[in-house]
Image (cartoon, rainbow, N blue to C red; front, side, top):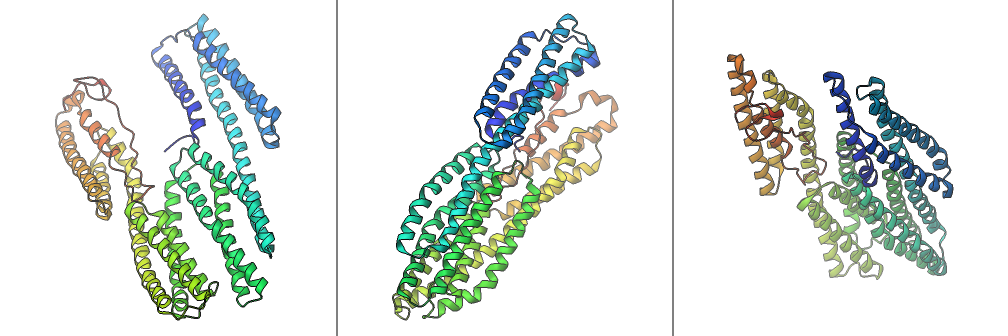
Amino acid sequence: MPVFHTKTIESILEPVAQQISHLVIMHEEGEVDGKAIPDLSVPVAAVQAAVSNLVRVGKETVQTTEDQVMKRDMPPAFIKVENSSSKLVQAAQMLKADPYSVPARDYLIDGSRGILSGTSDLLLTFDEAEVRKIIRVCKGILEYLSVAEVVETMEDLITYTKNLGPGMTKMSKMIEERQQELTHQEHRQMLVSSMNTIKELLPVLISAIKIFVATKTSRGAGIEEAEKNRRFTFEKMSAEITEIIRVLQLTTWDEDAWANKDMEALKRCLGLIESKMAQAKSWLKDPQGQPGDSGEVALRVILDEAGKVGELCAGKERKDILATTKALGQMTDQVGDMRVRGQGQTPGCVQRAGQCLQGLDLLFGKVDSAARRLEALINAKQAISRRLDAAQAWLADPNGGPEGEENILALLAEAKRIAELCEDPKERDDILRSVNEIAGLTARLMELRKQLRLQPQATNRWPFMSTWKMCCCLSTMPILPTLRFLRLNVVKQGCGGTGSGMLGIPGRI
């Protein structure tokens, strides 16, 4: 799980965080072993130069920006970074005079942490300002979309389309650049999904406005339905832009919370699909049904909700649902076009409507099956997450009791359930292979621990390498593309050189 939510922030702060970790270790070693801290004048001078440059660029940005929030939030970050840099320089000078100085060590840690914290504040403030720029463009599009409700002539429609196009292009470009900058894959996918939906709906909206204008100009029947269709498409686009604005402001990802949210969304989608099914089928069976009628709107809602379920899936299942949804949408368009031309009772139109009816049942079956699989995967993933920390703690504790083995076996049972849900044989085999290997290592580890209890004098030959192997197996258990948010992130434990176990302790494998 990424610590920093953008690649720029990560690239700047990650090295700083690593250096501070090194300083903290040096500080602790000095307190425990009384070790002297070497002369840090050169690296501290480099840090001071980098901080000065960062603050200079930041101040120039503040002077030229019109963002009042940035003007307000940047100066405190400047002060924190500069003060911390001064403290770091002072610590280096004190340590050069006395490598064992306790106050100097404290200054060193406080200054380093202050630089990390202040730099983080500075970068986050700048990033939030960049997000606000994108949001302003999104809100401008959102506001202009509502103008669709007052377009009543072809001239108005031409003007509306010309004005909307450049704004849409700008928003699309900004979203594309932003999603490439994010470190959380889930956030990237959400932005891309919403933007793709907006691109697909834009020509649908223009078409809906055109139908409304043509119907109103000719004073033909169905103007109310045409207006409903236009409003329906406008509301869908508005909802997607609102979702983009929400996701742009996210900086963290809670897997369990989002998994539960996804399950709630799945259940809502299925419920809505079921509630609209009878109305949609009734429209398909009625040769006189026209585009914009409530039945046709119900059918569009079904396809939209099925598409949402498809977006939550992955691999072959995702492609299958989305392809079926798209095909049914095209067939619905064809049925509507033929009925508008008065061909609703022709064999071709009746046949196409019948194919749509069959396709709806097929689509519902696929969506229902996918929802059940996703629910099972989410439940298994959450069960694994609940036991993973306890399993790792047991692996790290030579005196761990039998409950640790129980946690690992329960974890492996959940992994087997996931394997059973995999459609790809290779994925299934990879998971089962890892499960069997970990199970074998667990049994071996339990046997060695029993021997250790019987022979306390062998403590210095504790088989750390077997434990390390097991941790690596846990950490490399295949990540299923059938559930994007399934993660089995286990901290890998390092090992010593040839002939040594973890932490360089001698022992046998």
